[in-house]
Image (tube, rainbow, N blue to C red; front, side, top):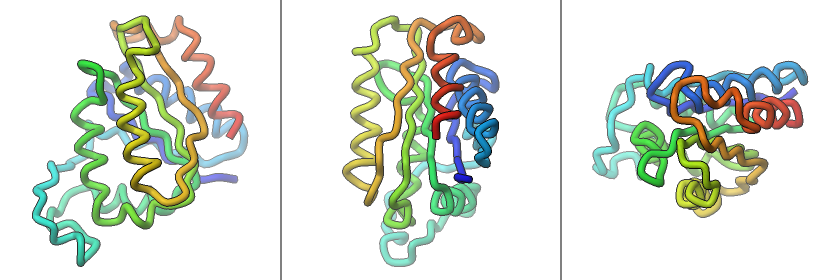
Length: 178
């Protein structure tokens, strides 16, 4: 059994990327894994202040929900990062979240990473900038990070449209295949 942590950066509960997170979790749980979703919009996570204190203490000076999420990341075997794509990149919730991993990013090692991106755009190639940003974080900053799968949820603008795309089935199947 693997411990799967799903980070949903959707600003809308039940939005398209959040729906794919739930499908991924369903597939993982049906395969006997433990899956937990963190819905970032419901968490209290401040912006990184760039103070540098965490470089020596490995703790952030801010007293918010990020410390608990970092504990979960360190303990996870599998991490799913999911975001809607806004103006060809991840949304602000995801970027803020990634910036706030600095206190313990060296401990987020040897993890399998899955990536979920949704966009109204129908061209998968236009989501590659977002994927490159994710790779910059995982491949260049985290030891032993393995890219295990990518879901490009294209052609979904309104809430619920993702359910009629191939990404809906793909998220479930990818979760089952962990």
